[in-house]
Every structure is written in C-alpha cells, then in structure tokens.
Image (cartoon, rainbow, N blue to C red):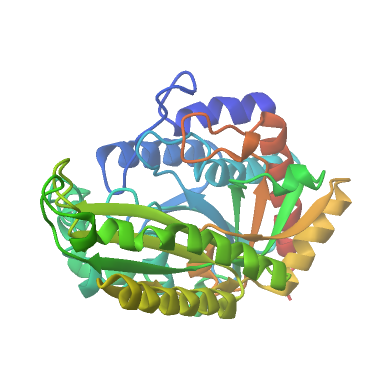
Amino acid sequence: MHDWLNQHLLQLNLTEEMDYVNGFTRLSYTEEEKQSHQAFIKIAEELGLHIHTDQAGNVWATWKVDDEAPTVAVGSHVDTVSSGGGYDGVAGVLTGLAAIKILKDQEFQPAKNMTVICFASEESSRFGVSTIGSKAVSGILNKKEVEDVTDVDGMSIKESVEAFGLSWESIEQAEQPDKALESFIELHIEQGTQIENNEADIGIVRGVACPIRLQVTASGMANHTGTTPMTNRADAFAAIAPLITFVEEQANEINREHTTPLVATVSTVQLHPNAMNVIPGEVVLGIDIRSVEDSLKEELAARIQAFCQKIEEDRGVNVDIHTLVNNESVFLNPAIHEKLTNVTESLNLKPFTMDSGAGHDVMNMAQKWPSGLIFIPCQEGISHHPKEFATLEDLSKGSHVIAEYLREETRRWE
C-alpha cells in the first residue's frame, strides 16, 4: 500500500518528486487544477470506477453496483494555495481511492454504491472565495454574488469557469438531490498538532469553526511627518495599533473563561498613504475570529466594538467596523462520528475527538447530507507551505479507516 500511495501521490501532484522547497501551485479553475483532475480520472479508471464530471467541474469516480441503491461518498480536492504543499486536499482524494483499492483487492462485494468526489476550487487563494465546487453540489452557491469576483489579474470567477470548459449559466445544475447520496466523509491533514500532542493516530472531527471576519477602518489625518507637531496629529495607525494586542489578549481571556477554544488574529494591515514621510491617514485591519461556539465569536466581536468606540473617544479618529463574514459553525453528524471512532479502534488505532479550525468541503456537504471528517497528522502542523508533509504510514492508516468505514456502510442494503 505504501508504494501505491507514494506513486499516486506524485501522480496527483503532477510531479516525479515532492518539492518541499517551492511547493505546488494549482489555483482554482486553472490548467494546473485540470491536469490534476485528469490524473485523478486516470487512477480511478485503473480501479474500474465510473467517471462523471458535473457542471461545476467536480469529478465523481463511482463504484456502481446498483442504480437503485444508495451511494456513500468520500472526497476532497486537489487545488492548492500559491506555493502550497502536496497533501492539503490531495491526501483526501488519494486515500479515498486507496480505500476502494483495498476493498477491491479483498474482493469485497458492496450492496451500495461508493463514490470518490474530487471537488473543484476548494481553496480561496485565487479569488478569495472558497469551496465553490462543494457549494454547487450542496445547492448553496450564490452565483450572482460571486460571478464578478476577480483574481489579481482581473479575471472573474465566471470567466475562469468558462475558460475551464464549463458553462457558468448551468453551474447550478451541479446540485445533487437529497437522495443522490446517503452520507459523505472527508479525510484531511490536520494542519495542526493536536493528534500528535494527544498521542493519537486519527482525529475524528466534531465540528468546523466557521469565522467572523471584521474589517476595521481607522480614519485620521495624513500630514507631513517632519512638520506636524506630536500634539497636533490624528495618526490613524498609532490610534488603532492597541487593537492588535487587544484582540490577542481578549481571545486568551475568553479561553480562560470557557472550555471551548477560540482563536482570533489580526491578519491583514493596509496603511494609507504608506509613505515614509507621511503620517498614516487611514488604516484598515482584517480580523479573523473562529470557534465552534458561535456565542464566543460574537462576544469577542462585541468587545472589539466597544474597544474601538473608546479609541474614537480618546484619540479623535473615526473607527468603522464592517462585518465581512459571519458564518455559523458546522457540527458534523454524531452517528458518523461514532462510526468513525469505532472503526478506528477496530483497527487498533487511537482516535481523538477534536474540532477543526479550518473550513473544508465537508462543511458544505453537511448542510444536506450526514457527514464526517477525519484528520491524519501532518509534520509540525505545517500546511499551506512547501514543507507540508504527511507520512506514508499515516496516509495508509487513513486509507484503512476509510476502507473499513465504507465496508460497514455498504455491506448491506435493507
């Protein structure tokens, strides 16, 4: 299994050797993503699976046994961030195919259909919009809202989908009816170190922490740095700077007060006019707040609002807060969580129940079908970076967990 996994890991990454220096760049709806989809199709065809590409560019590889029987699905994606790693997304697609290989090698005869979905455009690296493919499948893609969003070169999502060989007008037809799937699971690298820290083998995810994202704009007065007295300034940067440490301090305080963890980051800064000899007249901060407990996100956002009001009063600058995103967190199906836990233990592996701080395709699929998510370790928790790495042993463990789950889910149809 290790040799098979290594061979097809390289194949899906379109390489002969993993590049831990430069990484991989397969952005949403680009030729590179399409080539990786073709590699997925080739592997799936070698396994004797039926291939179908839907109107959003998602590729379905199905072990079809009965058109009337339910279908159990597993999947992930192969697109990456710029100069990203070769495991984020790919690991889920690879282990899904490996699980079917395991079952076929064992001459297992399922009573239900199985499918591995290679989703299109999961990452937000190109457009700032994530999980387009799985949103389309789940029927939650707002086509009008995103069609004119552009990448750094000014190419819109609509134009990119058309260039990919798809029709933007029919992308909504990728939506699947409720009866199309019985359930869905995804495997992903953890992108953290909780599994290792807890001396476990497999993470079984309880919920996905979707974010509140705030855009905070402080407006003061740009002026000459050399001629404006210190007592006569409206320096937007100096005024808003305490908010950066405030966010960190308050997140830590909330974590001391509650058992469910919260994380918060001031992750973007834009200074205007951003010149060495000009006092900053405007500063825009981006703040990302995440927890599976939505009330904790709201609490921190309220504390930020109050703190910014005090800055306005004390510093004489205007502070505006705009909520960019406020998504409810997604809790995954408890029954599937239990099944995945039991399957992991049956393989003499140690499961660890945890939450995901990052979004994945499964959070969209869970809106419509019972869904689950498992994590395998990644070295030092590094992800979205060329040094991203998961061992073949952990990929193999994940493959066997999926295989046993699929075996249990498809052995009978009543």
